[in-house]
Length: 111
Length: 114
Image (cartoon, rainbow over all chains, first blue to last red; front, side):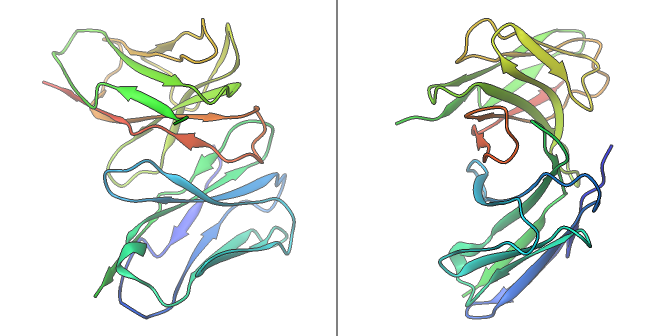
């Protein structure tokens, strides 16, 4: 079973702070790296799917980078807002059809 | 709207009983997945199906069974053989069975064994 590590486990920031999380995964047999946002009482929603080393993706104030050679991805949130409060999941794939998820980083943004 | 529905939202079961969780999608997706979440754990794959009438075991398939008779439906049965069935169950789908496509998730079912 593959091991996907996310850090920190949880984070509490003030509105307006910028923050970042880390996802570490095995660097061999890389196929794809996913980031999902999971708000309380809702379904997880995809933020990014990245497949190429050096990929950088952006959606509004949220961006992500990927380093497949060293096996990590960073998720950045610029100017955090209370509505960014959620659990952020990272998932990794070595093959065709399945993902291995990390335990997530729980973000709380206080007004 | 297109999406994934799961029912029921909450389910209570007595020990020794089998129970079936429903998952339906109208996204015309080929592949469907069942995950389990426990406190402090990541989502763990139970079963997945890439095509009708075919499915594969995930990492924690023991004590579970599935069927895929229709493209839009992928029910999960939690059998009495599952030692610790109390958990939150999520269903997901992908347009094709390629893991570079994003997964779409249902709202989940919380199962409690009394």
